[in-house]
Length: 559
Image 1 (cartoon, rainbow, N blue to C red):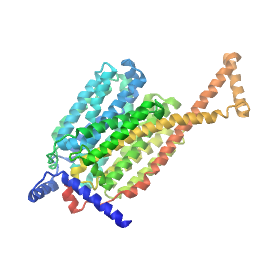
Image 2 (cartoon, rainbow, N blue to C red):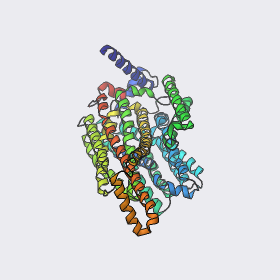
Image 3 (tube, rainbow, N blue to C red):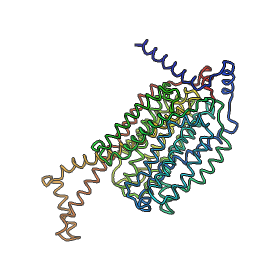
């Protein structure tokens, strides 16, 4: 058994070595050694913190737009003469086009260059934001959102790759803290900012506000960001049209099922079964094609790297947990507690306080402590916060929501910073773009799956709890009989005995629905807590190293 595992491991290393070599333009040995020396000595010309602020400004703008429109959908639907269900395509169209571009961002940035690709993406994103704000129909807005999502799809992984390449290895934990802060805080600010702008101005300004930010990001990226010497050295510029088509078809079908499956009762609808089949066949065909073509759109061979494969799986699982929590907590506050959209945003926003604190702490500990230990701490804190949310009730105060949210946010710094650092630690720099593209794609797909999963379980769980609780509402139950008589007597004094019976039954049924919904929310929070704990065994698969070996530094072209 050990001999077989040793053989597989050596074969994997050989394949990874072949992948690294495929990124080199064929050179004479002397020329190749010269390039290796240049790569090893390369450092960015400008201060790395100016570079970090430049790329994170664009990333913050892009991530903010994934959630800023959620609270504005009723206003958008009313203004553009559409139904609320139709207006949800404003979110879905953005996610679909964003997911399609994400895994191909590594190839695009290698072909065009990191700096040029970011400038093009920010420019298109800013123009698409202006188009969104000026939309006069729902179709026009959806088309603009498709362009906006496609332009923003590459900003996250390319920004991550720029940070990892620009910062020295010992400071990459700090770089990932900056990146994680933008990724975590912006989805929390999105609903709060969107609700305030929509209530005080117009929903169109949630898109127009991107214009000055985009212009500033363009100026800073043009001024401070530069490409490492190995970018663009590969002369193969062929476009993998087949791979792109298969990827677009698979992700479009899959994302549509995630977003609309619950409304159609999942597999009971014929179109859901067809879309799942199309997604499965397209995805298998895409994987086979990318592994056999000489110029793949997405370099799947990088998943031979054990840390990257493990980290990519874990970020998908964490995407389910984190975004699942983010999706149902505002619903709980608005539907059961009676908060407004802005008030629910205020209750959830303190999560960002915990995230910022933990980011600063984690940035200092990464590199000094074992990253696996930091991730373990983050997982345990996350699970504890979800179990705290699982104890909520209908008579709670806002403080009962704020403190679990602060704890929940505090876990993020111990998850995102060390997980990203450990995932990319053993990946050569020239493969960083491909690795970050896959890493961010799995996080987005995990987010979509998490939102769909918790909303489905919420609806189904509410029905199950309602059936269970209704079985106890019968006249033979003395508690039910006593409560019904008291309500009838009280309401009879207010509206007369003729209507008191129906009103009393209505109040009891409303209370039954609230209790059933509360039980379903509690089940979801606790399920996400247990799901968090399932991350722990996978941490044993990581290979933790303090730094790269000299040979790996040469081949990896460390910044």
